[in-house]
Length: 276
Image 1: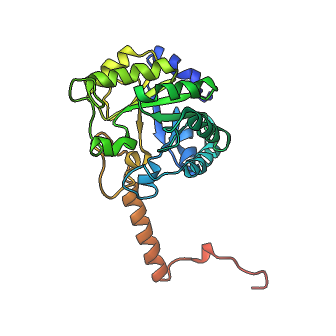
Image 2: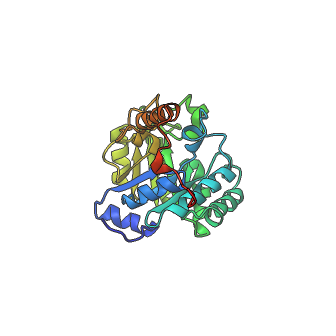
Image 3: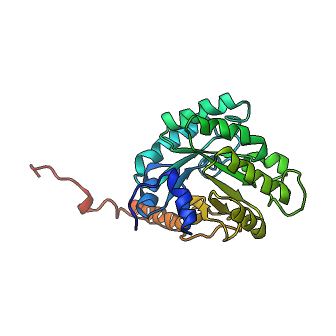
């Protein structure tokens, strides 16, 4: 496993070499350490924390201060992986100046090495302005969770032809606009395999897929989906590689039983005074 620090400039090289990029979300110090030591290339502090950490129904209520807090914890836990932080809803849409200032806070106060912005054509000018002040930007098009109300829910995009938001030709235009604006990579979420493959082939920057099929240059999953840290809905595109919800439940049941049966703490968990 390559232990060299992963930097923004490595992404283009990995695409050119045909090396698949591995990205996971992380929200705290322990999991940042685990994923970093496992050789994950990039850690995303996603505003998905609103749903998987805070229990909300969408990402919309997540604040910039919360993102800075979680990014700072992840920054302490990782050494090798590139650290990307989501810009939450309404921290970059009002003006380029607002976006530049808030991106700067994620870097300066949170320790992020890049920020991620949802949106294509309509956000291209904002992406360009942030890149111009030397803050790397990862784009995000397709199913963009901050647009949940416009999309009528978390719906797959690009199924229909056309240039309207969410249509196939528009997604291609969005991707090209993000690339032209200076993004170093772009997340493709929730779109048909053939659309993602076309975008990946046309872009010189890497594509990171989530629910976009195997032709992307890399993949990202929400850690809770990957680890089975849920007792309910798992997205179709996600694959649980463990069942930590069940294991944690069993551990808590065992602990509770031993406490109630006076089996824990045992002698090996106790301290004795010298006089005794």
